[in-house]
Length: 427
RNA sequence: GGGGAGGUUCCCGAGCGGUCAAAGGGAACAGACUGUAAAUCUGUCGGCGACGCCUUCGGAGGUUCGAAUCCUCCCCUCCCCA
View 1 (tube, rainbow, N blue to C red):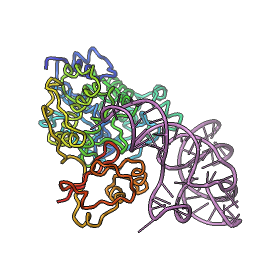
View 2: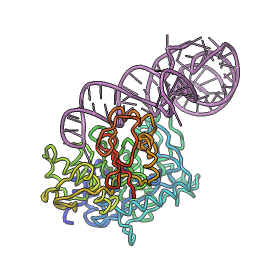
View 3: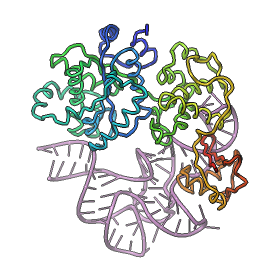
View 4: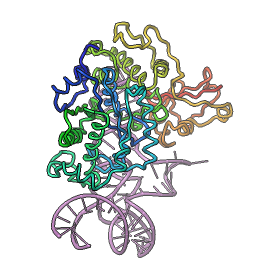
């Protein structure tokens, strides 16, 4: 790696604010730095919104720095008011431990945890046994309520109500940084830009407690070109857990990104060289789709592995038509090039038996039973509006029944709207 | 603790005794147009064996032929005062 990490990060769009850019740059350039990012274990899986900090950490690690991931086991029990207009629900200890385990597994795809190259710690370890009096005396005295109240996050919450509990969040996060500084010589905290105030609080605290040279770095808060939060889909969040979001759906999310987001996302969510990505600036028409295929493939590869990524890609081709990725388009990508024929094995579906088809089930019932529509009423509407296809043929009769003759090559292909495919397979 | 304002369908937000499954907007979904993009236009948007029936308007009771709308108690949120 001849490039400087900071340049790499900024070229890829990972830099929003840095507390002291020059000294930090110098530090990162001359030695391996231990840094940390906090993740709240509020669910048992990461989702696309977490991806940006995770990618940021991964880049740092590639450049020889050591990430500490704090799962905020202690702080999650309080809830961070930053950027929220409502109090967050609290979790029990057991849920948090369970969630953390799964999150670590997922992080393992992006970070190398072997031989202590990355560490994951739970701040409950020190927050859980905090002594209130000691904490107030040693830590609390360094915080000015007047100052805290001027922060935008608290100001906003002042309008709707802010509990004392939440008001303490910042102190605890600052304390985390302090503990990591003492324990692991952690010199840098990274996080989303909504964490800026909390990060500053941490580095201020360390300085006041006699520490030196600690820094903060924030990542931009991403929204898509249409203003939506990153990774939000009709079905909710875009999860990394294949049980919650199938690799196929995950892949589809990336293929369906807005044109305007393509290049930006490729820089942020893949490790492909920036120089190659830059060449994609002037795509036109259908070329966008080829580039999006690469984005989707690479993003899926990262979170689900290359095999799953290929499967998702083949499934998409089976449904939407094959594509040939030109050899000179982002050559570093390991996406299969040349003629590719689709293979449906990655398309969502269910296997059915003979009894099922012999009973000549109503199409609407099948849709509802497989969770493709929320209710039969919705199914009916969809059919009436011409949004349901069986083997690529539009069905507009709400009484339509699936029969043996609809089974082609051992399957019936259902399609809702333009993009949602579901195969019923028969053995 | 005292006073005030509120809690409506995914979200915002009307409704204030029947004509209310509940205006309007947003989100979402489908259709047309396209490039599995965006924008635009059109339609849909509680459930069901569907010109009818059932379940919704913070919760529980009550008044009434009839309640989201009135009364009682309770829960929760916000604002002002302490």
